Image (cartoon, rainbow, N blue to C red; front, top):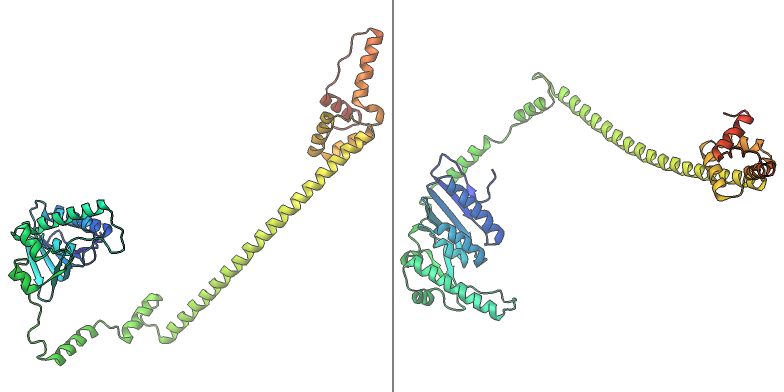
Length: 363
């Protein structure tokens, strides 16, 4: 699991460091609290909260304060690794033990709104509540009265800076961690040479680089420089061929798309031309009085022509004007009425078409 604040976490260790090296925002507070609860649940006995925090949101900072002041079996030590200002300073006070680097500083002040924010009456009331809460928190942590805290650290409109030595004297910190390195100038030249020699062993030599190249190209250990160069040139050629193949494929794909569009256009034009032929064929048959001029009859003939143009064209060509279906039906009806004979069956359009096809030898 990747952690943002936890440093060198191990279930086999009794101690872990959590870093809060940033301003307090909703995001930073949420991520810090998640990791704090994680190591606490893991049973770590010593939790070191290392701070270099310029302050930030009081509201989200209170979440961290609450977690650190909640009952726990772990010992929480806060470290000021640089500057703990504003809400960062109040979080520093929440450690069971508090350690200041000898160069670190604290800064306390009352909560306030940014100068560019328009403050309403409700905002002023809320701000007063925040400051009363911070005063009480500091008084409880230091064993002072709230009046003493306000007088010494939380005067309105004033920032109060405290050095490490002052913090120790004023019981804001328990310990000062000395960072000076005694005797560091004793033999600087030798120290630098030792450091250089140590890191030199990790810099790959030409022979090491050659072995890596041989392994990468899957060449035998006995491969010569000429063999390596030939393999490199072969890979370059393959890379060039691959690039050309990709370019060719892109061109072919583009050409195929263009041809598909052309085919689509041709098909559409052919369909339009065929529809025009169908409509002309039926219109000509109406003019020639081979079929009735009603919309239903014309539609039926056009549907047949769309399905099989050549067959319908031959059928209409074989018909004469007197074959008009409506005329035939009317004549048959008149004849039946005149003779008084039983009327013969009137054929439907499809049956009449089948009769015409059979008569003309079409199937």
